[in-house]
Image 1 (tube, helix red, strand yellow):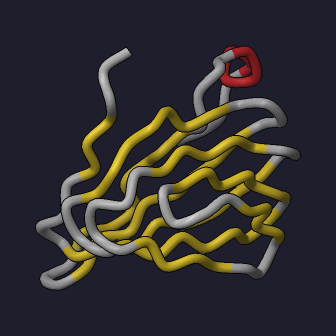
Image 2 (spheres, rainbow, N blue to C red):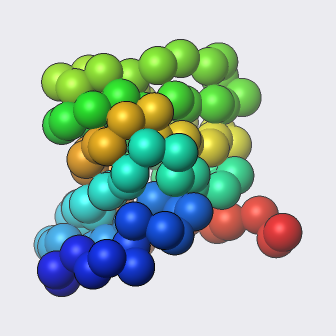
Length: 105
């Protein structure tokens, strides 16, 4: 999906499904500086990988900055939130049956 000029003004990181296979599904995570992914948790283990830029990860397992080419394993039930510190791209990889549940605002 092409990015529009409006995307630069949205406060949320974009989480877009790329592919769902028999065992795994893959999401693209795209953000501009300052955009956030609100608090959420997955009902299954997931793997977060940063391809470009920097993401701030807040989680019940600890907080840290993830740089390009760094990854983080988040066990099922781990509450987490992401903030794009720079323009960034990443991937979320999880089992095909996994659900990400966002907290109500």
